[in-house]
Amino acid sequence: MTSAKKSFFIFLLILLSCGKTTKPKEIYSVTKDDFSSLEKIQENLIEYRITSDRKILISAKEKVNFYLSKEIMNSEFTDYCWGIKGEIAFLEGNTNEVSIALDRLKAKNKYFFLLKCRLEKSLERKIAILIEGEKFLSDNPEIKLELGLTYFEHGDFKKAYIYMEEALKNLPYIYNRLYGEKRDTALKLKSFSSSPEELKWLLQKKLTFEGMLNLTIKNTDLLKYLNTSNINEAIDRLYKDKCLLYIPEKLDKEVEKKHVAYFLFSLMAKNNSKNIANFYRKFPEKYRISSPIKNLFVNDPWYEAVLFFVEREILEISDGTNFYPDETISGIELKAMLKEIKGM
Image 1 (cartoon, rainbow, N blue to C red):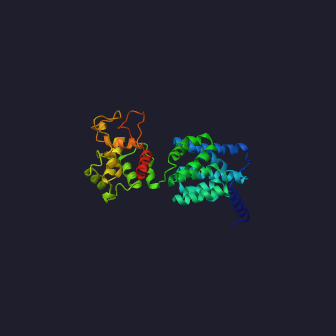
Image 2: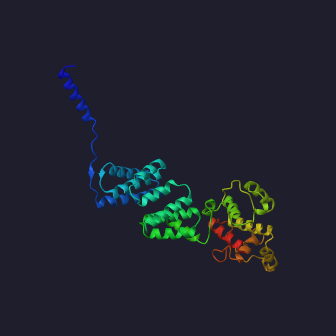
Image 3: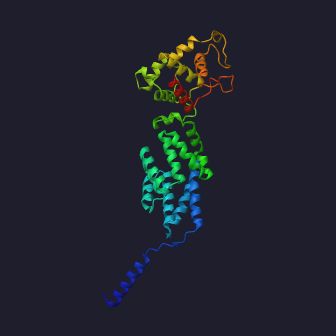
């Protein structure tokens, strides 16, 4: 190779090398407006949980990715960006991206504990992580809220209410829109304890036939005499024992107040409850002729059952005079009834 050709070849390599040089990241100066922008994105993610509007996630990702494409000297801001990026990944169901975001955090901010919690399946471990976060970041409302929500799933409604109530007082109103109803539910359930397995039935606003059976099994021993854990076999035996008014075609059929009253009263009688015996012994003769409650009739199959529970204030006459047998009942209402029956 001649000297001229060699020089040209070296020059060409230099040019190609320059063409491959990566452009350095642009240094970005963070302002208060940028922090406000991240706070707004965080609130928008709560809006996404309410509406499931994908545009919110797309917009949030674009903004966070814009920030992360810059050279940012503010580590607090960078951590904030990675935390929100991890939260977006969680909402998309991408646990791998959640792990990456968690690894990129330089300090133990709120997202360090929230993202660790997101990756855990054990409720007990989640609670331990969040308690550590609460100690490390005292009075952080997002940590307190997550702790309240986790206690709710764990069935510790007293702690759930305390943490959610305190957190929602210190968070923007949109958090109340999403979690206010759950906090109010925790307030109603404060005097109860529950297992995570029971929660499904407990939170049914219109209790199903299957829910009625499961809550009764988990909160009383009234069904032990059946000697079976098979729900279909249990239903068959209950029907033969005349403890059920009917068997729906599907177990997710909603039950009505008349069904619940008849079911529980029949089970108590089947278990030789002294309360039932005393009720019949003192049953006023006039009530055998006419009913003291409107919309409740002497020839109704659930007649005595309703009178029994109303007399003990376990069932309420909503307007003071009428019983509405076709109204549905919630899981919480049945849980309260079962608690009263157990305490008899």
